[in-house]
Length: 355
Image (tube, rainbow, N blue to C red):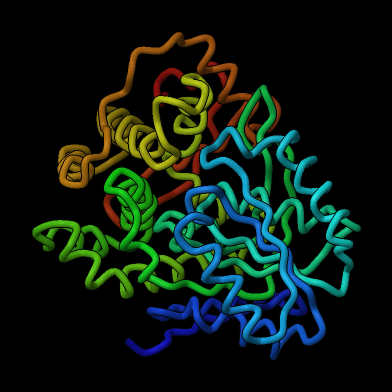
């Protein structure tokens, strides 16, 4: 497989996304060539560290790079201020400086947590993303959103801080268990819903996930291309970039309601996109039959599409703590049909119709 390269064009903050099988082995060379003299702190989680941590350190050492590994527990619970404090302590012990580098090596949690640590330690240290899950490869590693959670909600403390590069190795997906792979497919399905129906058609062609994995490179490229075009138009999330939140308003509330234990991020997003599409179709906003077709795609990849029983007032409170809330209204993303997402401001009193 040849390397596919996308450039996120943001002036002085521009950077490349490299998509190539087995490009993990290129990470050391990339760092040595682009950040000469740097030492590197690798932020990862215990599961990824057990599989690939020693390999990445060896790859870096072969280029004469000194590294330290900071590993957190897998899961959303690590995206906390407590984990951040532990990471800062390890940085201080390593004597990390602003001329050094941070490598986030893991899924969405590691990317968000490590990116926020990079944005805030010593007022900013350069970092690169090496995403290891499908969710991180198609979505969270690109665009510069970094954050941690608070007890009151998800991603309430964060920043826009772009990496110097994103290196995506689809071979790393082969060691994901089925649930985590499907978790990422929820974000892929989101892109098909809001921008490109052909993504959904492609997903439905494959007999199983093994066949999909063989051709996953093109799907990663398509999703990253969509995100690139949106981020370039609206870096700070005031307009078109909100389209990327399709399903996330309810999804984040579902995650929080069940204390990040019952549903993964992708599963919660799947619930969110299915729920709002059913309701918008009932209201005549979305083309008839869309919700049934959407449920078929979600069902094929083992993603939930039925909304669990939850206390309405608790969910509404979580929704209005969301960063997409402004005053007495919130921006919701809906679709007219597959490939056509749009944003609508909904007043608090009208939220029930949609959520």
